[in-house]
Image (cartoon, rainbow, N blue to C red; front, side):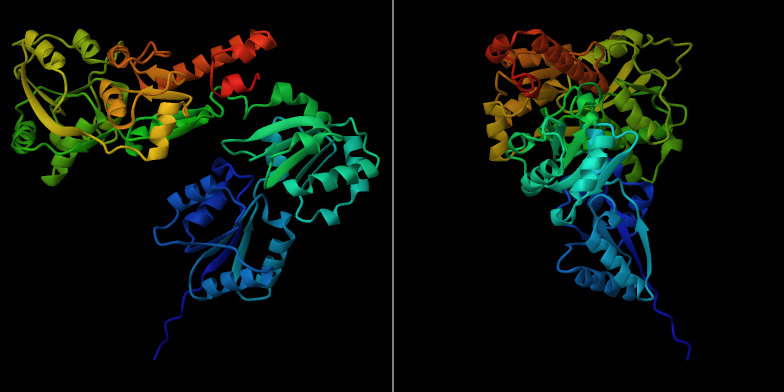
Length: 526
């Protein structure tokens, strides 16, 4: 009888880098996506672990590393012998940790297949994010045990160039004493960075004499930069100088809808908080949509006009129910009220014929929509699938232009449940630096489920209709982009933050302290 050989799993020691999920290498990503079991260091930031979990297998097990190196190695070896792929995810670079080196040695003594995936070292990575160059002769190390440091060698490194050390905040005093005892000048520039590469990274600059006091309140792992490179932070610091760095921004949209907006906000340094204000539900009577889909297939319509991503999704779901696909849109022209909606259409393999080049609204679309011509348009009917609460502006304008309009309820929008109490309190007390409204309904529903944003919160709206609604609710509109789109809305908020920073920088110190301008931009100058 032939025995089936049991598959053998693989082991990977993966460097996570300094903490920003974007610094994971492609090889690290591939190892994590393929993993059945991930053993992770407890010191890794939750944001990185959340990003890894989102990409991992649905049944992958995540457990913290426990015990001595030999104990961790046994867990990895056991998983591999059972046919699973196991990963030990560590901060920085795997070989920057003596304990991980011992784990690798233990695994190497077995027949298990293993690899070591390098990661950006914590010290060097955070120094770059803090704007401290380490050119020429330099030393960078991720320190686990301060007692092993050769302070004479470190002093020599400072004399030749720049130094970066990733250490525990509790060891800063011992490092100061060791550097001074080794002859490092007490006036040498020092930077201390907490939450390196994270959303709340913060760097304080001082000197060897004073950096322990300057870093009071820092906890966990920090990166210490010493030497001439610290003096270049004013010009080279980029992570902490992004326009919206540290701004807590309220995004009143569902997680699915908020993806693009939140990603753009994060790129500018903001911390988005997504709060759904509406829920999308099917129409109460589906007969209208059933007839509309049959009409599309039978050639009843010359145009389909989509006014939202939800409308695109509703029609496509109805197509899927009947086993239809993009080919059944053949001969029907597609118009979209804006680029985001057009992108949703294109995602299904369908090209659009019309997207307003100017204002992306009902009025903007009508301004570019041709009147019906009986000769050029033998089919004179338009399908308009939309929300149950949509305005009549578009349907009325098309009728005036000679088109017959099937105004169909494709979905219903209902008010979402109130957010948790802590978010409601933050909204009303000024805990958010800005709020971005993308429609009149987001204004109405946010106020309805959570209350009115505090007066110190910057209010940004996507267009004139949304601005009108915000004003009706007693909100001061601070930001409105010239072009109604999500990317332009985020760009406008970023530009507004830069203007605030420039105004505050030009104020005398006493005037800054008395300024009514709130938020992280103001706090940097106080």
